[in-house]
Amino acid sequence: MNFRNNGPISLLFAAAAIVAFVTPAANAQDRDRDWNVGLSGADSSVEVLSQEPPEYPGARVRRGQEGWARMAYVIAADGSATDPLIIDSSGGQAFEDMAREVTGDWRFAPLDTAVERSDNLVNIRWEIEKGRDKATSNFMRRYIRIVTHLRAEEYEEARSRVDSAHKIAGWNLYESTMLWLMTGRVEGAEGNLAGKLECYRRAHRLSEKIRLKREDRVELLEKIFELEYRFGQYAEALGTYAQLETFLGKSAMDEEIEALSAELRAKIDGNEAIAAQATIYNPCNCEAGEPLWYYKPARRTFSFANLSGNVTRFEARCESHRVQAAVETGKEWTLAPEWGSCRVFVFGDDGAAFEFVEHPTDAGDDAPTAAARDDVLDSRNRGERG
Image 1 (cartoon, helix red, strand yellow):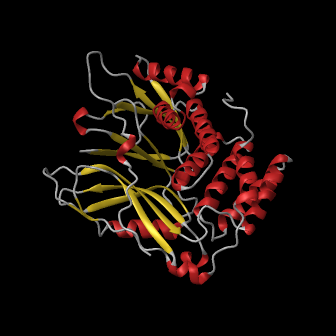
Image 2 (cartoon, helix red, strand yellow):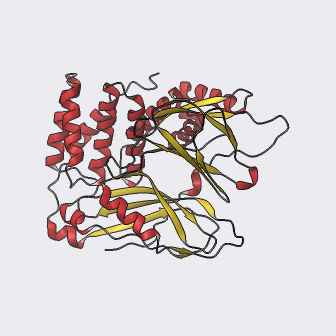
Image 3 (cartoon, helix red, strand yellow):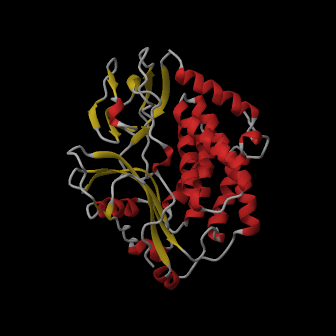
């Protein structure tokens, strides 16, 4: 599938960056003084008593490194926040450690029942105000070299340079977005489409508050949709379709995407099992992360099949219930309707693969979808430091 005839995403970004976004790095004094940490989190019915953002790792802010993390957590019956789980991040372990650490200080109003509230997400952004949405000349030199190797089909050299770029501290979130887009290109050139999808997803999540050209963001979403469709991740693909519709409006949607979205809805509503192909990955691209795969199921009964590699356990976090168990093939689990919306997290070794099989709803069962709502994340910034 090729929904639009634009050039590769990474080259579009490179061209824009070379013309408009090259700037010298902020000096160390500026970095110490001019920074903030923002939270955007679950807009739930649970009253927030205290949810301060984490500190900015001192060594990282001095080097100009910006970070981002997406974290799931549980609100216990007494209102404490427990079991933080980093599910996506960029910038390295120091930011993840700060995110996990601050969770222990968060407090919410005690719940009316003794049942914990498990389906909570928060996005955390560590940003240096000076130089935001710009790429340094140092980054652009590295970026252009990678582009050159890809265009020449010198994939080993491109891989070496992109890995080297990830190891260097000091990238802002704009640069990190570009780097993850380029990493996705390298993964695709190597034939690892699962890796390409995760890199593109991370680039999109990172760029949510970064000024990107509308056409670049639309093209990125279209490529994510294409890969989600290819891997049978229908619930995620429909979520991506909804974002595209927000940007374009229904009348301007690509006709092929429109047709595929209708096909996906029919399959989800049908009487056949649907199987999403899944690959476990390390969310922080560092040794300290816990490899996982997570999904918002469209149906309430699921099983696992065709395991390849070490897939160990799963955890379903729902609005009012949590299920944890070892992964077993040939066994089905059902998320009760009264548990509300859910997300399923699967753990194992980085690179392990499996099929996440969603089974049709029994005839006459009008239980609502299990899929977690996309609107649990909002744009509110709760607390800024500077």
